Image 1 (cartoon, rainbow, N blue to C red):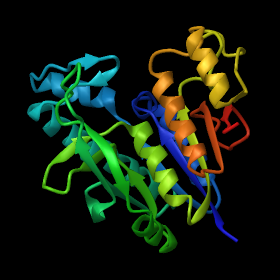
Image 2 (image 1 turned 120 degrees about the vertical axis):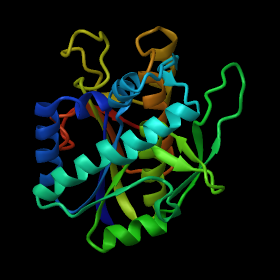
Image 3 (image 1 turned 135 degrees about the vertical axis):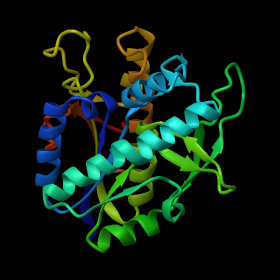
Image 4 (image 1 turned 90 degrees about the vertical axis):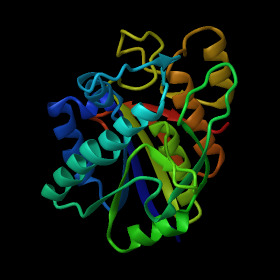
Length: 258
Protein backbone atom coordinates (compact mmCIF):
# COMPACT_ATOMS: atom_id res chain seq x y z
CA UNK A 1 0.00 0.00 0.00
CA UNK A 2 1.37 3.42 -0.99
CA UNK A 3 1.92 6.15 1.56
CA UNK A 4 0.08 9.42 1.04
CA UNK A 5 1.90 12.64 0.15
CA UNK A 6 0.62 16.20 -0.15
CA UNK A 7 2.18 18.65 -2.60
CA UNK A 8 1.25 22.30 -2.07
CA UNK A 9 2.04 24.98 -4.61
CA UNK A 10 1.99 28.55 -3.25
CA UNK A 11 1.90 31.52 -5.59
CA UNK A 12 4.03 34.64 -5.51
CA UNK A 13 1.18 36.85 -4.28
CA UNK A 14 0.95 34.79 -1.09
CA UNK A 15 4.74 34.69 -0.69
CA UNK A 16 4.70 38.51 -0.71
CA UNK A 17 1.98 38.82 1.96
CA UNK A 18 3.50 38.17 5.39
CA UNK A 19 0.21 37.46 7.16
CA UNK A 20 -1.10 35.06 4.50
CA UNK A 21 2.28 33.35 4.16
CA UNK A 22 2.55 32.87 7.92
CA UNK A 23 -0.87 31.24 8.02
CA UNK A 24 -0.10 29.06 5.01
CA UNK A 25 3.13 27.83 6.56
CA UNK A 26 1.31 27.14 9.84
CA UNK A 27 -1.23 25.06 7.93
CA UNK A 28 1.40 23.39 5.74
CA UNK A 29 3.43 22.42 8.79
CA UNK A 30 0.32 20.86 10.32
CA UNK A 31 -0.26 18.56 7.31
CA UNK A 32 0.50 15.06 8.58
CA UNK A 33 3.02 12.80 6.91
CA UNK A 34 5.02 13.36 3.76
CA UNK A 35 4.78 16.67 1.94
CA UNK A 36 6.40 18.95 -0.63
CA UNK A 37 6.15 22.72 -1.06
CA UNK A 38 6.48 24.36 -4.49
CA UNK A 39 6.68 28.15 -4.65
CA UNK A 40 6.53 31.02 -7.08
CA UNK A 41 7.99 34.47 -6.54
CA UNK A 42 7.37 36.53 -9.65
CA UNK A 43 6.40 39.70 -7.84
CA UNK A 44 9.58 39.68 -5.76
CA UNK A 45 11.63 39.08 -8.94
CA UNK A 46 9.98 42.10 -10.57
CA UNK A 47 10.78 44.25 -7.52
CA UNK A 48 14.43 43.19 -7.39
CA UNK A 49 14.84 43.63 -11.15
CA UNK A 50 13.46 47.16 -10.89
CA UNK A 51 15.97 48.03 -8.16
CA UNK A 52 18.74 46.79 -10.45
CA UNK A 53 17.45 48.82 -13.39
CA UNK A 54 16.29 45.74 -15.31
CA UNK A 55 12.95 46.04 -17.07
CA UNK A 56 10.44 43.21 -16.63
CA UNK A 57 8.66 42.18 -19.80
CA UNK A 58 5.53 40.04 -19.73
CA UNK A 59 3.58 38.46 -22.59
CA UNK A 60 0.23 36.81 -21.80
CA UNK A 61 1.22 36.68 -18.15
CA UNK A 62 4.53 34.95 -18.91
CA UNK A 63 7.88 36.53 -18.09
CA UNK A 64 10.40 37.15 -20.85
CA UNK A 65 13.67 35.88 -19.37
CA UNK A 66 16.72 37.36 -21.07
CA UNK A 67 20.24 36.84 -19.68
CA UNK A 68 19.92 39.67 -17.13
CA UNK A 69 16.51 38.52 -15.95
CA UNK A 70 17.76 34.94 -15.68
CA UNK A 71 20.33 36.15 -13.14
CA UNK A 72 17.58 37.92 -11.20
CA UNK A 73 15.16 34.99 -11.08
CA UNK A 74 17.95 32.58 -10.17
CA UNK A 75 18.93 34.82 -7.24
CA UNK A 76 15.35 35.51 -6.15
CA UNK A 77 13.69 32.14 -6.68
CA UNK A 78 16.60 29.88 -5.81
CA UNK A 79 17.99 32.12 -3.07
CA UNK A 80 15.92 34.83 -1.42
CA UNK A 81 12.44 33.30 -1.61
CA UNK A 82 13.45 29.65 -1.36
CA UNK A 83 15.78 30.02 1.62
CA UNK A 84 13.40 32.28 3.52
CA UNK A 85 10.70 29.61 3.16
CA UNK A 86 13.13 26.91 4.28
CA UNK A 87 14.15 28.94 7.33
CA UNK A 88 10.54 29.58 8.30
CA UNK A 89 9.63 25.91 7.91
CA UNK A 90 12.59 24.94 10.08
CA UNK A 91 11.18 27.25 12.75
CA UNK A 92 7.97 25.22 12.52
CA UNK A 93 9.84 21.97 13.09
CA UNK A 94 9.70 20.93 9.43
CA UNK A 95 13.01 19.51 8.14
CA UNK A 96 12.91 21.43 4.85
CA UNK A 97 15.46 21.41 2.04
CA UNK A 98 15.40 24.03 -0.72
CA UNK A 99 15.96 22.75 -4.24
CA UNK A 100 16.04 23.95 -7.81
CA UNK A 101 15.67 21.48 -10.65
CA UNK A 102 19.46 21.46 -11.04
CA UNK A 103 20.02 20.14 -7.51
CA UNK A 104 20.46 16.36 -7.68
CA UNK A 105 19.39 16.68 -11.35
CA UNK A 106 15.78 16.58 -10.15
CA UNK A 107 14.16 18.44 -13.08
CA UNK A 108 15.60 18.76 -16.59
CA UNK A 109 14.14 21.03 -19.23
CA UNK A 110 14.83 22.38 -22.67
CA UNK A 111 14.74 26.01 -23.67
CA UNK A 112 11.31 26.85 -25.07
CA UNK A 113 11.44 27.03 -28.89
CA UNK A 114 10.79 30.41 -30.45
CA UNK A 115 7.38 30.59 -32.13
CA UNK A 116 5.36 33.79 -31.97
CA UNK A 117 7.31 34.95 -28.92
CA UNK A 118 10.93 34.46 -27.83
CA UNK A 119 10.62 33.84 -24.10
CA UNK A 120 14.37 33.60 -23.68
CA UNK A 121 15.71 31.34 -20.95
CA UNK A 122 12.39 29.71 -20.14
CA UNK A 123 12.29 25.95 -19.69
CA UNK A 124 9.73 23.37 -20.77
CA UNK A 125 10.12 20.26 -18.63
CA UNK A 126 11.50 17.05 -20.13
CA UNK A 127 11.84 14.82 -17.08
CA UNK A 128 11.60 14.71 -13.30
CA UNK A 129 13.56 12.17 -11.26
CA UNK A 130 10.81 10.93 -8.96
CA UNK A 131 13.04 8.23 -7.50
CA UNK A 132 15.64 10.72 -6.27
CA UNK A 133 12.96 13.04 -4.98
CA UNK A 134 11.26 10.20 -3.12
CA UNK A 135 14.59 9.13 -1.62
CA UNK A 136 14.86 12.54 0.04
CA UNK A 137 11.28 12.35 1.26
CA UNK A 138 11.81 8.87 2.71
CA UNK A 139 14.87 10.23 4.54
CA UNK A 140 12.56 12.61 6.41
CA UNK A 141 13.16 15.66 4.24
CA UNK A 142 10.45 18.07 3.06
CA UNK A 143 11.56 19.40 -0.35
CA UNK A 144 10.88 23.06 -1.12
CA UNK A 145 11.02 23.38 -4.90
CA UNK A 146 11.86 26.67 -6.62
CA UNK A 147 10.56 27.37 -10.16
CA UNK A 148 13.97 26.86 -11.75
CA UNK A 149 15.19 23.93 -13.84
CA UNK A 150 18.28 23.21 -15.94
CA UNK A 151 19.07 21.87 -19.39
CA UNK A 152 21.84 19.43 -18.42
CA UNK A 153 24.40 21.57 -20.24
CA UNK A 154 25.05 24.11 -17.51
CA UNK A 155 22.20 26.55 -18.12
CA UNK A 156 19.50 27.38 -15.62
CA UNK A 157 15.97 27.94 -16.97
CA UNK A 158 13.03 29.86 -15.57
CA UNK A 159 10.08 27.45 -15.34
CA UNK A 160 6.46 28.01 -14.39
CA UNK A 161 5.80 27.04 -10.76
CA UNK A 162 2.42 25.45 -11.53
CA UNK A 163 4.18 23.26 -14.08
CA UNK A 164 6.85 22.31 -11.53
CA UNK A 165 4.12 21.27 -9.08
CA UNK A 166 2.27 19.27 -11.72
CA UNK A 167 5.27 17.37 -13.07
CA UNK A 168 6.64 16.70 -9.58
CA UNK A 169 3.26 15.26 -8.60
CA UNK A 170 3.23 13.08 -11.70
CA UNK A 171 6.78 11.85 -11.03
CA UNK A 172 5.88 10.92 -7.45
CA UNK A 173 2.59 9.20 -8.37
CA UNK A 174 4.27 5.77 -8.90
CA UNK A 175 5.58 5.95 -5.32
CA UNK A 176 2.74 7.62 -3.41
CA UNK A 177 -0.93 8.43 -3.36
CA UNK A 178 -0.58 12.10 -4.28
CA UNK A 179 -2.81 15.02 -3.40
CA UNK A 180 -1.77 18.16 -5.29
CA UNK A 181 -3.03 21.50 -3.99
CA UNK A 182 -2.68 24.73 -5.96
CA UNK A 183 -3.10 27.50 -3.39
CA UNK A 184 -3.55 31.16 -4.22
CA UNK A 185 -5.55 34.25 -3.24
CA UNK A 186 -9.00 33.00 -4.34
CA UNK A 187 -11.34 30.36 -2.89
CA UNK A 188 -10.87 28.25 -6.01
CA UNK A 189 -12.08 28.51 -9.59
CA UNK A 190 -14.84 31.11 -9.57
CA UNK A 191 -17.68 31.51 -12.03
CA UNK A 192 -17.49 35.26 -11.34
CA UNK A 193 -13.94 36.39 -10.46
CA UNK A 194 -15.03 39.02 -7.92
CA UNK A 195 -17.57 36.79 -6.15
CA UNK A 196 -16.04 34.25 -3.77
CA UNK A 197 -19.45 32.60 -3.37
CA UNK A 198 -19.46 31.61 -7.07
CA UNK A 199 -17.09 28.69 -6.50
CA UNK A 200 -17.12 25.91 -9.07
CA UNK A 201 -16.68 22.84 -6.88
CA UNK A 202 -15.72 20.26 -9.55
CA UNK A 203 -14.18 20.56 -13.02
CA UNK A 204 -13.58 17.77 -15.53
CA UNK A 205 -11.80 18.01 -18.88
CA UNK A 206 -15.11 18.50 -20.70
CA UNK A 207 -16.24 21.10 -18.13
CA UNK A 208 -12.96 22.94 -18.63
CA UNK A 209 -13.35 23.10 -22.39
CA UNK A 210 -16.89 24.44 -22.03
CA UNK A 211 -15.87 27.04 -19.41
CA UNK A 212 -12.99 28.27 -21.57
CA UNK A 213 -15.22 28.48 -24.64
CA UNK A 214 -17.82 30.61 -22.86
CA UNK A 215 -15.19 32.85 -21.25
CA UNK A 216 -15.81 31.81 -17.63
CA UNK A 217 -12.23 30.57 -17.37
CA UNK A 218 -9.59 32.80 -18.96
CA UNK A 219 -6.12 34.26 -18.53
CA UNK A 220 -3.75 32.64 -16.05
CA UNK A 221 -6.39 30.23 -14.80
CA UNK A 222 -6.24 28.33 -18.11
CA UNK A 223 -2.65 27.03 -17.74
CA UNK A 224 -3.25 26.38 -14.02
CA UNK A 225 -6.17 24.06 -14.79
CA UNK A 226 -4.29 22.52 -17.71
CA UNK A 227 -1.50 21.61 -15.29
CA UNK A 228 -4.06 20.23 -12.84
CA UNK A 229 -5.74 18.10 -15.50
CA UNK A 230 -2.37 16.82 -16.74
CA UNK A 231 -1.58 15.67 -13.20
CA UNK A 232 -4.91 13.88 -12.73
CA UNK A 233 -4.66 12.22 -16.13
CA UNK A 234 -1.15 10.99 -15.25
CA UNK A 235 -2.24 9.22 -12.08
CA UNK A 236 -2.26 11.88 -9.37
CA UNK A 237 -5.05 10.86 -7.02
CA UNK A 238 -6.51 14.28 -6.24
CA UNK A 239 -5.96 17.87 -7.39
CA UNK A 240 -7.51 20.88 -5.65
CA UNK A 241 -7.36 24.60 -6.45
CA UNK A 242 -8.06 26.59 -3.31
CA UNK A 243 -7.42 29.55 -1.04
CA UNK A 244 -3.94 29.65 0.50
CA UNK A 245 -5.51 29.61 3.96
CA UNK A 246 -7.55 26.46 3.20
CA UNK A 247 -5.07 23.74 2.25
CA UNK A 248 -6.60 20.97 4.36
CA UNK A 249 -8.06 19.27 1.28
CA UNK A 250 -11.63 20.06 2.28
CA UNK A 251 -12.15 23.29 0.33
CA UNK A 252 -11.87 24.70 -3.16
CA UNK A 253 -12.29 23.32 -6.67
CA UNK A 254 -11.59 19.62 -7.25
CA UNK A 255 -10.15 18.78 -10.67
CA UNK A 256 -11.37 15.41 -11.92
CA UNK A 257 -10.37 13.27 -14.88
CA UNK A 258 -13.83 12.41 -16.21
